[in-house]
Image (tube, rainbow, N blue to C red):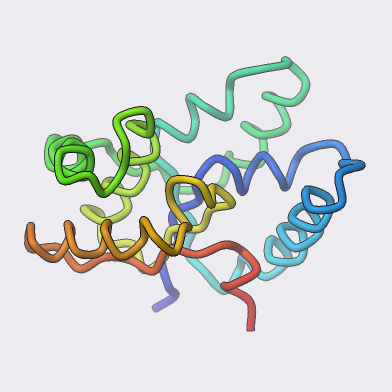
Length: 155
């Protein structure tokens, strides 16, 4: 059985964006493309929240992002996931302004993903926030997935 990976929107954005002149963003883009070449080693999933975010912005860019997601499984945003996202905020694991990030993480947790793949190092793949998310999950009876960047999920 392949590991299950929830793709947060930033991964798709970096994968499909025009090459950046910013050295850090360009590096993230390259690493994401390298990881994407290995995607067959994983079962990939998103939620409707990812699809909604991917569909925003300039029409051409949105079309590229959505086309990339055509063969990716879509997970339901359940009541349990919505409640867990609210708990992340109530327990201060994530700030209220990161409600969509809480939802991404909660869907992945409730649906039993092995990994949450993201470049959102402000609210998700953050060394200070990650343990708070993991603690909240365990307190509520869930096993947390590994939250990481594509760079961290390379062998």
